[in-house]
Length: 490
Ligand code: BG6
Image (cartoon, rainbow, N blue to C red; front, side, top):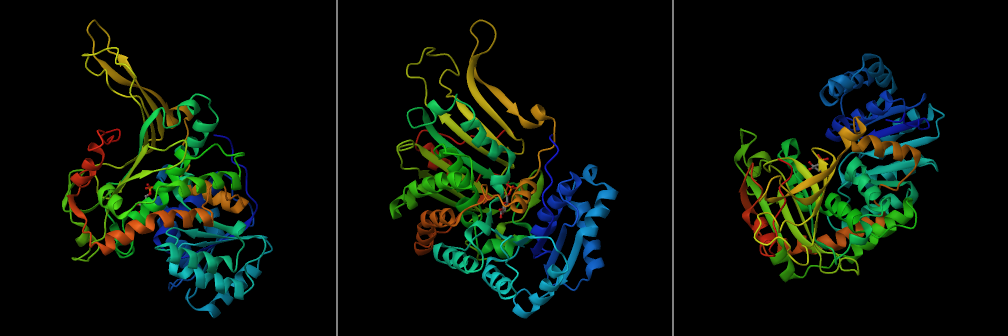
């Protein structure tokens, strides 16, 4: 791998510096960037949280968390020490504006110009934190603010948050993170489409039969039951991650690969999503909730047990049939699905091409298998083009064989985690891979009627046993169109 370009020194402030996201994702990602020499001298990482810790206590805690969340072979005692020396900690009540004076004092003790304010906390705090930063004159020209999803729980609350943050920071300073856009294979989708000539002539409704986008997880909600029970799979995954991936599959070539052109094209896709009527929602959306079951040989409890709400109607699985109503895609179904506690963890995009116009090998087993382009995001990052080939020998069957590009094998390197790439983009001030306000609002405008309809019609998610592929209705959703879900690599 090329040596990454160092970024300018910065004060990287994490609100919610002791929380799940900070310790599991952000601090390990920053450590790994430090390890690769990307953090420069003078860079400080400032945890802000209401926790009864002092600075040495915070360093001890983060040292222990790094040992949990960074693979042992990437932990290097000398670099860990250098990284820990960058850490500062401020204990404040995030809802108390006057407490931010302590953050201001700490920031005033350095002359570095770039400030990153990472809001790794509940969205309800985004507005108040930004207001406090504004009141203490901390939102300088060279500051950026990073908002974690979900941005609101519907269109109105998303607008409210965007207005509150926008009254302190300019849009170019606001980085709405969707970590799916930082995954190597998702970025590579842009390259596959726009740095090669092969696919473009096929990339439309005359050649493509349908597209599937799946993000399946074998884990349950873990310790996030409280948050999750107020969100559900549509708000947590589909409205953001899956729609962003859909945008990259469906967008037109941008004029340039730069911050505004790419985001302009994604926004156009979101605005072209056909609105779903009440009848469409009834027919084309499926919800499920996991019950007890067996996952990887282990007996696990139900969602209601996990979130400690016996009456919960929150969906842990959602499948939707969507359409991008524009000239390129009209009539091509996009089947989206995501769920927790499924049989395996895999995320992939399947682009299935139309069958041959005239069957040339009638009666031979395997002759009717369509070509598929499979872009696997996890567990392995790879792109496979499934072509039909003949098995050796006379009278051999036909079967799909893959032309495969596996990143690990091709580049022999560790793929950086999505957060590693995105955090460095924030420090550099490059928002190309972040969601612009109009994108977030367009995504909500499409998703919100689904949530309303489910609520108003009293929809109860179907139970599916943990460790399976979701409720049977999800199979029906696609099978009634004469198609079937592609079930990952396993
Ligand atoms: C997060 C969701 O955004 O993405 C989680 O809030 C989900 O519920 C996670 O588990 C999945 O991310 P990944 O990268 O493991 O697919």
